[in-house]
Image (cartoon, rainbow, N blue to C red):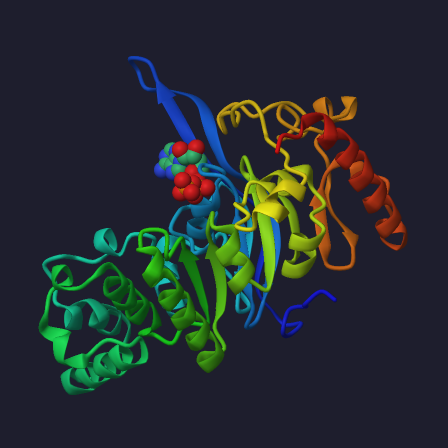
Length: 358
Ligand SMILES: Nc1ncnc2c1ncn2[C@@H]1O[C@H](COP(=O)(O)OP(=O)(O)OP(=O)(O)O)[C@@H](O)[C@H]1O
């Protein structure tokens, strides 16, 4: 019933990744705390798959994507990409490893240098990392423009002469220039008109099929993630609370936060809308500089128990391929996973009834 990753080869392995930003305050700029943007995240991404990373604004998705590509010096944890351990590699030594891993940014307007032509923008990584001749680079840029559906005649133009969707295609062409294996797509369609979003997603899918690319697709658009992702990881306040194959997650979410996120997705059919069991979360997201004791979600969870205020739940595989960090699943052995999961689900539904509005 549930779709599995296409291969069992892990291209990306992330273990206990932490990215804390220091807070300095007072006259002497003393170190007074840390914003725990990413706080102990672990997951694998299989070759050729798209792992969707979803969650509310500020939960740490972008920081996680950037940290994996070592755009930051991480606070802790390990990162392996295509067999290379890069978690503790000094920045100066990362240069040779960069071609394998690339990023497509949210805002193509901001991520493209307005003073560079499209030719120069797409060629920049080739200048940095290859010894191709000028003519070879020009030809390669033209090929890349063809691949992303841009007319090569416009290689001499500047970014402002292009529409938002075309600018994102320029960003994608630049990301492809060094034949990467892994691309972090950080909200690549969020800044685009709805009419253009599907085109860019289709392009990413076509390129994935053609080149066997592996994506981490960061988005807050759960409908789009459902379309593109093989598996989906749900983040809340710097931690992954659930990671499941796509169909399983949308059909039978395990974590109370996943249920709440999914029930907030607009349902176009009014009859279905009336039938849906909606969980409306109350309260604000706590600050990542001062997360609650116990489970990070305990202050807003409709199924909260006493233990949730005391101990942090372990993130563990409760059914084959399904990971969750929730005390409702804590004593579940893998074989008994389904029963306990449905018991927890019943308990959740019960609790939802008390918290539901239509
Ligand atoms: N350079 C930084 N210095 C300090 N705090 C930061 C920095 N970058 C991010 N943060 C904080 O880390 C937390 C996570 O931010 P992040 O941008 O990763 O979240 P996000 O889930 O990607 O949100 P959005 O969807 O709005 O982009 C936020 O509280 C943010 O303010």
